Image (cartoon, rainbow, N blue to C red; front, side, top):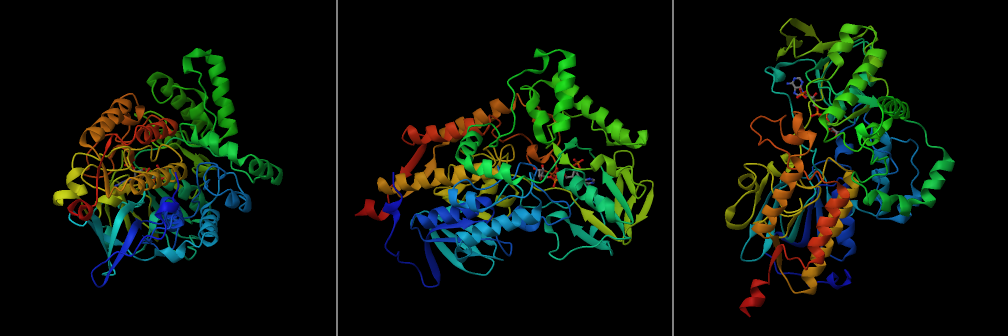
Length: 554
Ligand code: NA7
């Protein structure tokens, strides 16, 4: 199959003031960047749009102190260009945000991506034109575009969520949002700082800001489990070895459940003796990283086994935190370990041994309001010079629901998803022809390496476009039955998963009135790829196509 046939397409007639394109790409994170590259290389007339001032998505916005990826850098990078793989050298096992952003910009420079992306521009609507079989896209700059295809590379974590606490607008100190962090350095020295939220973001912030702030107050509602990252500088010999074997490493990542080369055992928890289990957990703790989840095969489905591991981590909290009362408050209970995103830290629990760091347990002392001067909990007001919000995102669906996406018969994505996100393969929705999603909410997004998923999705979309061109087809959309079958499979798989047992953004629990449930594909990245490949190999039976209406009329 070749993409060459898509090259040198004739210009289409369009109304004055409207730019006619083949592909509009919304978002310039990893998915959008690769889409821009891929579809431009195919000779298509493309335009990318990005609300931020540059490429990078999450890594463009999240510049807070301590921001760092929790997957190995060698995995958390593009695989489509062997040249880029060889030219770029990671300095740390888990790269920090500045290095990630340098990498992202290196890729954008190297591939000259920015000339195809309009920055500081938000897409405000995308409307399907049934007669002309194209998408009309408008932006907040007042411009209109028409495109055969629309790619929503809007990301699963791109809409930050403020907490629903009264008085936020009243606060007169400096309010900082983790996901909209200023570009210039922020000093905490000698300041009284509050942090609301103890997910991955809050944990990364607390362990950094705790070193510098005069006083740090951490407002914790649900404690997270966190394990040592044990980050280290990468030795040149190791990097050289990786570069020699990158093709194999990538292949292994594509054939894994998480899209990365981390250890995964086939050993069930109860298949070994208690002593051996303990030793395996100790080893995993010592080695650091996400190794603990891979120590046994059944930790996300066997609740009893899971509780053993949770108790092991609680024991570690006791070992590190000097004050037993604080240790107790930090211990997560009531939900399985790994059911919330497991965090990797470098000194989180140790931070609570510092005299300037104070933990406020919002389950026993809830936040009542934000005042002009600080935060008032039930037990009283604490005055703060700075308040940091690390309160998460309207995940998975927030970005696509934030603007008007209108498909056939005037139906919006908001209508379609009123009871929860639904699509076929997380890639396309019935009723929304020629509209594709990357890392969509019914794929493995959030549960596997987002870059591997993005690359997979863009390649899948490219193949669909070539298929259409080869066969003279103007539109593609999944059949209602295929979409329902996919959602049934997603549901069936999810019912086994312990992810359902925690109140997280995975299940929509962190956003008021959001439909609840696990709509992610929990079967693993490799299985997901197999399903998506089968949809092509069976001749796109689960999709409906139309020919160009003009051609039909002729
Ligand atoms: P998360 O994991 O959604 O964490 C948000 C945190 O903010 C969580 O601890 C929340 O507690 C807390 N929160 C939210 N609203 C409040 C109020 N009103 N009061 C107190 N605490 C509140 O987001 P992150 O940004 O940390 O991580 C997102 C993903 O990024 C992560 O999963 C990784 O994939 C990377 P709650 O749990 O609701 O009790």
